[in-house]
Image 1: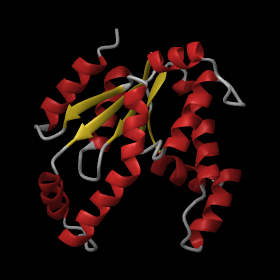
Image 2 (image 1 turned 135 degrees about the vertical axis):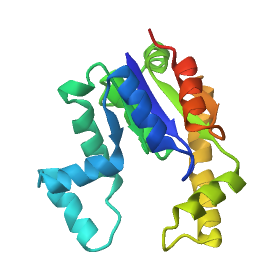
Image 3 (image 1 turned 90 degrees about the vertical axis):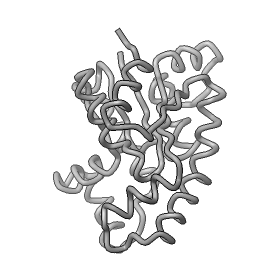
Length: 197
């Protein structure tokens, strides 16, 4: 069973690689952005609540995102595994994923239960040098992208994600992949790392 979380800074190729690996293992590629858009488009209860925040230009609260992720992971197509892209973004959300996987509501899991969860979950960290990321993001040519804003986004990403990387390192779930290769080379490295029969 494939349960993968993709981490990586903007421009690292997370979305591309996550969808390739999901396709390879025939499991859903789940991105929080897509979940949010789908819920809003389908006018689900959670989607309508999220839309209220979005219409005001506010960030959708963590609690709502967590509910949407939980609902998505319970769907039939996700029962043989999934690839999560863009989630979790912080240690609190990582604990939430652990609770979901263990089926525990109170989060008081034993060390054995946590070890079992650890064995079923892999976290891929795509590493790409900042200079390469800046070049990639500038070449996308988005209007609001200039070198200063890109470097700031990368700095914010590093600050927010470092604790998450340490969290998964401690649990021996983290696999760091060199994302500064051709798209196919990165995919091949991923397949070798994941290596799930």
